[in-house]
Length: 282
Image 1 (cartoon, rainbow, N blue to C red):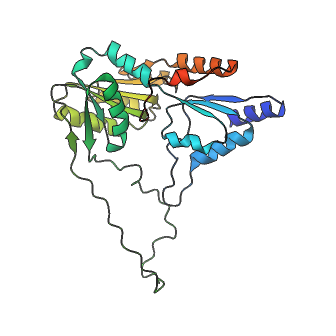
Image 2: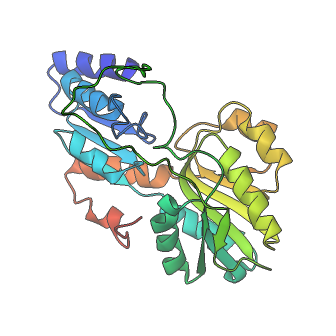
Image 3: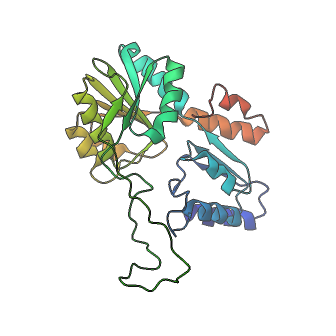
């Protein structure tokens, strides 16, 4: 709301351009319709446009298609060059590492990291927690009623319930360093469970790398008590308090690319340089 109010104030003051720098775009996971729910990300895009913003600089949107929700330019910068540099400079013997996707949905991002580092790839399949699309959000419309009368001409086929296979690690992690990559780390239960599986499969050190470290609720305590050796996130979201609670959390500074993007937009220069060596799946 503060951003919307400030943008509207600038609009009423006849500002020529109003550029919003939003490193972590909120509600970015709510970019699809589940059952009869709302697409909150689309609503937020409309509100920002209505308030008067003419350009947005953000980083690692959860889905790249979110850029299509906006009626003005969106620069979706990438944090992967900074995280790749951290792997090469701060992880000893990183050549013995394997990049891990904690679910098949994250396999493309993990493959992008593995190809640029020339490392192996592993995917955890069949994890125990509910997937994003399988969660019961309680919005049944109309509600389920027993012995309800159905139109005689309307017979819908029964939907088969999904049954997840037993947990399997596709790829060899025995005697290797496991690096789990993702874009957002908020509820860490899935990362902790993945770390336990990798430990059982023989990985001797486990890193978790993500762009946005939300780390809400009991995340610092769960990380400290888990098999994870280090959690590396960027400073798109402030997490100084969480770092005090858990020394395993490390920060990579990405202010350089944001400041360069601001400078280039202000001077009317090309933004293409900031997207060099960026793959489609990144």
